[in-house]
Length: 207
Image 1 (tube, rainbow, N blue to C red):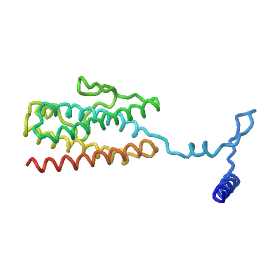
Image 2 (image 1 turned 45 degrees about the vertical axis):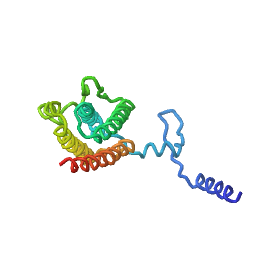
Image 3 (image 1 turned 135 degrees about the vertical axis):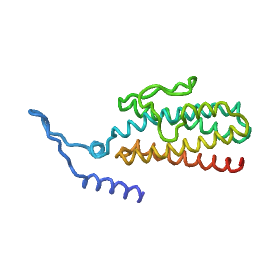
Image 4 (image 1 turned 45 degrees about the horizontal axis):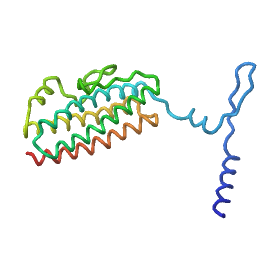
């Protein structure tokens, strides 16, 4: 009872001390008081062109990773590599859906993922840090067994490191200030860093 009473007093006190912000009306229209929630929205950083470009390009970046993981079941020699690849596949698909939704919510064009073709279509389609060239990708598709395992791990580690570079480029360009864009970029860093560590550990065992 005491706690409830104190909580109520605190809420009432906060309401009393909250600043009143008045927005002038249009000519001939009355002014209105802006709520604390509306004021928070005004103060919140907005997304930038750098955020939009990052999301669009990262979808293509992730799409190539999915093309690489699709090769694992029929080519890998290590029993652990398919497990790593499956985890990677699930996380990358979920992140692509999240990026597409972020873009759609802001009326921005979102690349479409075509798993059957092994890539995405749409805006932002060019080489990004860590991505494999057509020749390198063809070499990975021809490899098999332990040679494939080593080549896959080396290539995917570099691919993931490229994603971390893209996050650095995002912040350097002034992006990542909007809360959702920042949260997603931080998630990419955390997730890809964990996967890099797993792959490096397995690669060390294969050498």
